[in-house]
Image (cartoon, rainbow, N blue to C red):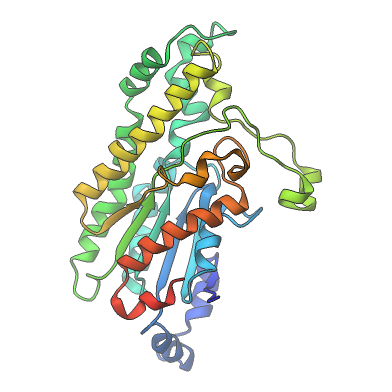
Length: 301
């Protein structure tokens, strides 16, 4: 299986790529004639170090060069700030990148952000009183999806200007929708078999959706209806909307991956297990392959 050479710090990236006129850079340039140069940037689906997440499962199936950056738990609005976007786009301008892979937006609609939407209901404590439809109308009124689109647009607007420049028209951006939640209320499985000996130092983590919604909707059945609508609308109102606005942007569809409907696919409420991420890497890499210049597509497994 081909394996990508990748780093997690820009200082390491400069060492990997070598000086502009060096022998290392000449070798890199030859290598990149038939292999991709990639930036992975995102939240825990990309950046958690505890096990092979989506970014690592993707990279280990690609023969190329890449860098992985981001922060577990980060929101799109924190990842794609104007200053961060300016910094990353300048790096994309100066280095020979082909693909920018993004994973962001899920955290914007969970935990404290979700609790903020329903702060009036949560103050009362106890069991929720709203139906899924009543709760979802309140969620839509809070404009979280519009906020996620706005965060992505800060980056994609700058990327549009970059792609319009000579020599950069080949650059493409890819992100993804999410899988339907099937383990409503499940905390993270932090055992030695799953994440190694660091499990001894970790406490319970999650859930990130049901810990809020159990105080909002009447029961788990209504919570499941709400969750299904949220995942479907993220696909349509965020990812598909951005695809329509930006011709260089593609969203990989994880909503329809059949294996994701099985409980064993998941590590917790919102994170696939290592094997689950390996499953998602197949459609993700297929889309990456499609976006690459023809001379580099054979490097993607």
